[in-house]
Image (spheres, rainbow, N blue to C red):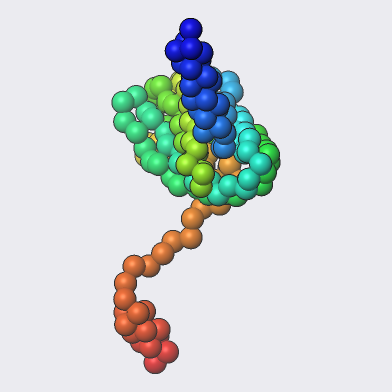
Length: 176
């Protein structure tokens, strides 16, 4: 009997620890309608929140899967205050020359407390009667860039790798 009680107490402690570890960043994502036509518009809805009482720095990786190929990821970043919710919904155009097929937008949010959350929004692109003229096919990476920019999250600041001497040489050569 005491072994059973000890097991139940240990199981409850493990359960409490697991519940606490799941706190942190959460992401939800949706594309509407789930069937889009060339020259039409879709709507992306995004919700990103911190379900913890501590502020978080969050990296969001956005990628677009087309058929079996994955394009991206594009890295974004943001800060979330305690229990803060960031939500955004925006319309995006479907380019006329975008390849027809099955797509899935994927967002992975990784927070400074090591919590992570992932959301996937599948959709289908169908052809339509709109004219594309002599325009070359639009790569799916263009659509990914439009969707990433529309989220309203920050792009990371690019860094230049090199030595201080190389940096000094760069600025000294421009002054002359």
